Length: 81
Picture 1: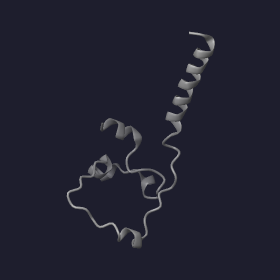
Picture 2: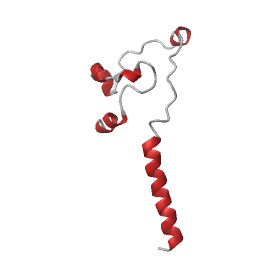
Picture 3: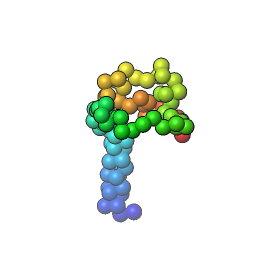
Picture 4: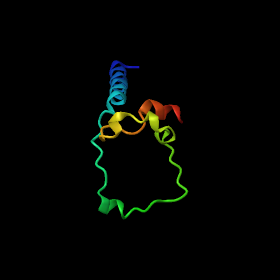
C-alpha cells in the first residue's frame, strides 16, 4: 500500500469509531403525540412489542419518562439480536 492509501484508511477507521461513540447521544427529546393526533391511530391487535423494555418494565431507564432516551439502551438491544 502507498502512504496516501494507508492514511486514508486510517482516517476512515477513526471516523467510523468516532461515529459509533456518538451516534446514540445525538438524539432529540421525544415529543409525545397530542391526544388529537393519537386518536387517529387506533390500537392494533395481534402486535408483539419486541423491545426488551416492554418484556421487563423494571428495566426501563428513568430518562425514558422525560423523553431523553429510549426504553432500551443500545447495549441491551445488541444482546437481543
